[in-house]
Image (cartoon, rainbow, N blue to C red; front, side, top):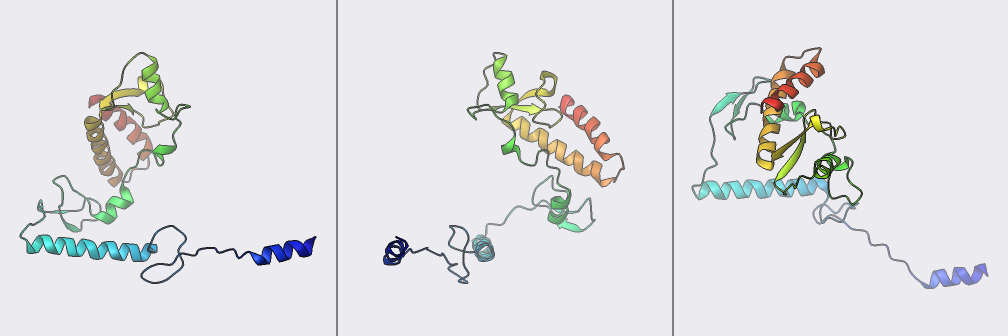
Length: 192
């Protein structure tokens, strides 16, 4: 019986397709055409060419002056009117309220977060433009005193204000940073 299986297995050739990067030829683990380093290099080259073409056509990117980074003091060119940090300091000090918001608890059908469902259960009709904001920024705390209904535009503005105040507060290197932030966040949110 085992010899029949061996003969049967040898008669069929199993082909496993191995993908290789189009640029460097290394073996790929994803379904992409390029490996991560080649993809980044290709994207960088495209960006350089794109901005060089814009400059050649006389279209200049708007700049908003020169300022100093609030963290390291390095002189930077402002690409936005409200820019106050360099890229490295922004990455190091950026305040992200919820690490994986897509993994917060949702209703059984997956259509809404539990905070939104709490408001819908009260009989409110919420359009797509309305967002449920958690004042303490904890998506699992769905008591009514912690929920706030905002438009998408105002919700984005509120988070920008919170992020800017977090960066200013964290610059002070206080030992009681979390408690200070919890108090300030609640005051900023309710005042907004």
